[in-house]
Image (cartoon, rainbow, N blue to C red; front, side):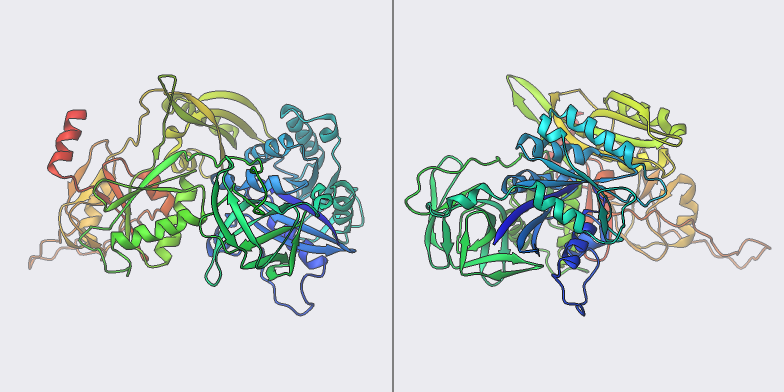
Length: 605
């Protein structure tokens, strides 16, 4: 069967997973009476809840005798480590662009990788039926983006279609019949070349591992495109690292291929197809799986280095062990090591004491997803504030810088620019109108300055701003950056909070807890209105007497407390504070410092 391998790349929420739904339905991958969930490729609970693609996933459809392997790639930069390697196993890309928003930061990031690999994109202008859609402007912006990224003349001569993924149609003309996706299918068959590897089916077997996974029944599995030869279950192969050194030799226990939404066992994997192999114990992403007689590894993209680190520890608060069943450091370590096995963008290191672990990754969202998965599995743990990983080069200390693109109402541009370029040591790169009453701001800001900024940004823009960020590069260290300006309210008692006490504390600042909630000494219960920390008593009740006066015994009315999400809590805490995460609740608290640590901190101050 003829084969086409294609990846779909887009910014977050531009509709690529919905588009894949329609391609699957219209190609006959589902039975007529089959119940199919919306955004079927987003298989994880968190992916469905947040509407983002976290893990790259492959599927395949058949269209008029041709098998089209489709890879749905992550749209968020924190999971971009997947994207660069995915592109190495496809022969074409569909670049999906929202006709109203135009190309966005993560569009730029992934597109630059695709163009550098020589892939010729197909541009899909999605959501053209939205009232705010401007497909001609979006198309011109895509052309300008390609030109700025150094695209060749062949890449600049890209075909495009107008589409509505949610309504299931794609047409070559804006005023086309709007019936189905056949125009996009035909364009893929015409424009994307068949894999060059198909001509190398008689050579020895070679495959580059692109994604890593684990199956509860067959163990460690690796997915990639077969570069040459054939492979069957039972064949003996070896794994080579990027330098060509042998890692292990093993027997293939199973060969799986994507057929619709499921992976099914096949008799033989052939050059050009995207398949999954099982049977290895050590081989990982970027390794070459090949026949024993092959010498030398296939060229591969190195795994991107992590940019932030977070310390995971046991939950040692007075309320530990009440909600979760997995609380020991040994169990937490085993879970983190399992995650590091299947997620190559995460690195886990032990601390000297052995009861905490430094987890390094690509961003706050990636860490938040890992912690959320762990708490749903019954874990209790404490999490530190994210710290940026610095790099030493030529005697200079370098720090990561991110490109920030902000779409905001004209009224709020001043405060956003002041926060990004003043307090957070950023540099303004571009500022231009972005449609009706909006301005687009582009700035290069140190990653340190963006930790915890999202909540402040939403407050400054009254919830109307959109902020996107992407790793840009490294720059010399820019000196100290001011952290959170407000102090916190700290409980000085153990017990259950009292409404009357909280009512009196409201004038001191915003509260994070409500009445009748468990608190303990050292727990952060609110944000102080001033810049210093304040110890308060949330258990103090009203003094009772036998004297009654009109109006003094009215019911206490409390302002609803601020409830932080996991990512907001992690970004909010300072270096001397921790986030306590349990399956049922998220709390903030002051870190317990031993005398030596207190002495070291006082000397540093």
